[in-house]
Amino acid sequence: MQIAIVGAGIVGVATAYELACDGHEVTVYEQRSAAAEEASFGNSGLLAPSLLIPWAAPGIGGPLHRLMLGSEPALRLVRGAGREGLSWLWRWAQAGRRPDTAERLAALERLGRYSLARTHEIAEGLQLDIEASRGALVLLRKDEDVERVQPALRILREAGVALRDVDADTARLIEPGLSTDVPLAGAVHAPDGESANCRLFAQYLRQVAQELGVRFVFNARVQALQAQPAGLRIAGEDAPRRADAVVLCAGLASAALLRPLGLRLPMAAVHGYSVSAPLREDSHAPQGAVIDPLHRITITRQGQRVRVAGGAEIGHGDGMHRDATLQTLYLALSGWFPGGALTSSPQVQVWRGARPTLPDGAPVIGASGVPGLWLNAGHGACGWSQACGSARALADQIAQQAPAIDLQPFALNRF
Image (tube, rainbow, N blue to C red; front, side, top):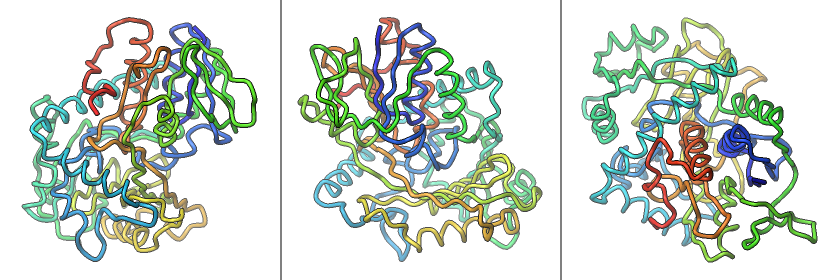
């Protein structure tokens, strides 16, 4: 089939690769000038366990009001949030209290585990160096901090994921660079946890996809989707471009493109921040991934760089970086790993990006209900950890084969 994909983030690139592997003729349309320039650009890098990624799903991290309290709350409403932002936030809070929360988290865990296996399969098969590091450590400042991630830990343990409760001394043996000055009651260690460079992987995969015949069209903003026959309209062009099928992987633009077709996707932009700094001293830097659930911050090792990520803002905020949030990230990095990164280097990269998030924390994957239109969007903070599995499962559906995982929890009709 001739298949058009809208969006060249990590999800769109992975989808293009899988469809090309199946023998389809694929064209990817991206409004930016390169792949992985938006949500995939500077994310935390954490691949697994995906349920421990901050903002992975509602119901993890404590009640909503707790996240919004204090002088520097983990979640903030900023300029542009409006009524839609408040409505989305209410739905997010409600989703965390629904009776089916455990089932939804279990479905997300299965998707994350399947996706990690597919990511490994691709990276190893193509011999890609994606700056991966192993191990994840959840830091517990106080004994009660474990309550913040208990729903995720329960699901992970029931799924057979290796998790160890360790004391502060053992945590510092696992991560020798951890400061001895910061109070630490203990930690939860996931030895099979993993982080890697999302943007680097997306760039590699784009090159491989092109070698398989995928055509990437950059600086092309899709203005509208067309049904019967399937196709899309590029801004500035009079005639639509037709295809046998269209796959929507357009992040935040997905909701606007679906609305004229009568489809509602309750997606919000949850903006996050990251700071990436060159490695200063290996023994003082993180060896794997470290998660601070109190402030919802992750610190990951990516080759010769260290990345600290956190913050959640609903609303555009005029696109401005909030100095106080960045200061929190800098303090977390220097506090937990003093001397590990060159935060004063001119090579430090500061990023603020929108994570396209649905109110129940799960993406939409599968048929849209409109003939020829397929969806693979709304992965939120977990786009990197879910991309390869989502792409493979969707490619199987398009080929009218049963995917290796159940996609029913990710259907559009759940809203």
